[in-house]
Image (cartoon, rainbow, N blue to C red; front, side, top):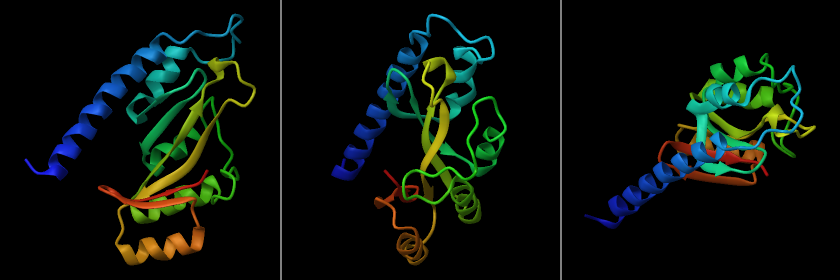
Length: 163
């Protein structure tokens, strides 16, 4: 087995273990003492985003989302936990621009969700980057235009991320 295959096998194993740990953390998450009757149940929130949970893990009050198609992101704009199309992650393009770019180039979005059940006043969906399956010429052009904080090639395309 070559080193690239061994590394990929290790990464896949870590992702699988971390996803299981994340689901356990989310399942055992303590809800606020006085729940708001207008909030969705925690279980529904996790189920809603589950297919897009990132292996990256959870904190006590948010979790990562990844591989979100633009079509799914559009539906989240009208859900109980909304985002504004004009929102941006610091110097990133707006959510509207990110969704349009991902849609145009067949990419996916990633970011994080702070559920209302966290008790935080800033509960929201936030996109802080996207992955585009484009060639290096297009990727470099978009990198120059949007100036992400991190830009790198991954197995599924080029990743653009803003801090």
